[in-house]
Length: 145
Length: 308
Image (cartoon, rainbow over the protein chains, first blue to last red):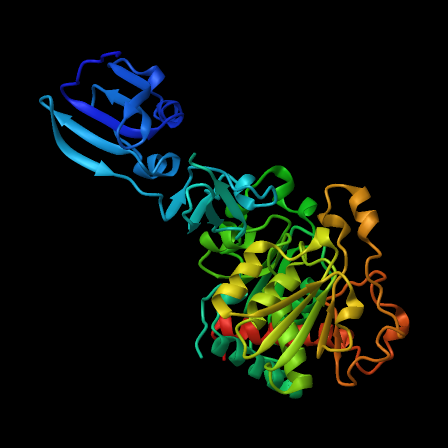
């Protein structure tokens, strides 16, 4: 099996559902950093069968709402001196602001820079996560799988 | 009931008691208009209309003038700084220094809410795209109250463009909060009521909803028939509009077996969905409904300005 050494000080994003690793990698803009990062894809996993992992040799700021939106199964491990100092889970966020656009083309948030698209979670079924726009009330859907 | 400084963006911004307090005042204003002729002396209403309007804008202006106040504003976005690219947020911030209360109509859904977020004077939603039109709902409620005494135990049919019809959206959301109202939704399949509204009234208020494409299925059962226009301006495609524009045309024949005390309402303007022969029927109340808009808007502004 492919081996990647452990990190000393930084963040490991674990238990990412296959395919979501690349999305998170891109959202965190990890392709443009100057510290060591690695994206592991399709790694065997007891919990998920297969999973993606991201290791970051640096303590960067993470937007937990964004991570929870893409994949609410992930675990975040904070690493200090080679050991896990903190473990965190994420959830599908109840309120979201500025992370995605409203699906309604007539919504003011799609045409006015002062209207930050803001949503309230209505249904957290992972196959059809449903958010309601705080401006136009229309639904916008997400699929984590 | 003190409503001073509040915004009215969505009809659910006010409780039923608050809505009823506006209606009670409107009834009183209709009875004795002269008593209120100096109520808003020194107050200024700004009318910010980015989209065409006859009834809403003129009834707001009439309401403020009848209470002794003044009015400024624009009736067309091409005559405002919007044509120079000014954002809605900047415009409302500026208007805050010019007026005491503002009404806004805008083609984008959620625009009135955005304006209210940047305003310390009361903002009233005069229609935001196909979303909401809460002051038309107040007008509708006043009309129902005047004819039926109470707003309860009613079978209400809403017919026409239920997808983009903001008057329908606001009315359903509001009536669902009153006691024992059943809804009969009559529309072509392409213009059905949006899911988010249906879910809202079903889940929150346990409302009874019956849907059909045929007006004849319900016309003899209901207490109120609320007709709406198929709105050309809401279609991206002219062909789709042409296919649907004549979906429902109410004629004298069609109402011949309807209840004698049924109310035929319409937010106006109408195109051809109510034949002019219906106008003389005693059940047709749409012109009086339009007149009621002045009294209810007087009452609303007086409450928001805190002068009563």
